[in-house]
Length: 147
Image (cartoon, rainbow, N blue to C red; front, side):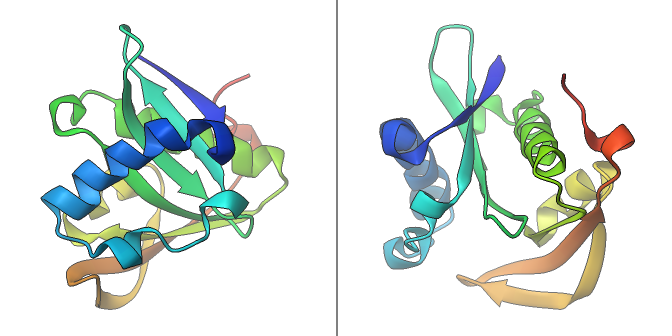
């Protein structure tokens, strides 16, 4: 598996089916909420398997808000999410960001805590799914994971 930073204009045909499968079909997120109009302004990452199939994606807004982390069911628990998150954290450090935030589905809080994120505030509903805001202060020497 490998992860790369991609441009929305070229990668949309790979990103869209992953997010439709995970968010719209599996989690019943309304289509109008999933396609929020922000994608053209975000940094996107894609995870590919060894056969060249796109298996996961995530994005980060210019302000350091990470979101739309989605990994196809057969690839969950195999490191794709960790690799996607690592690539976005690398990008944030390279951009000079000192803090990143995200809204974690409550079942994924432990995943983000293992990556150094801290919960902030109370649980809230987003698209009918319980979430909690989380943040991470970036330290370039610790968080720049790849050369």
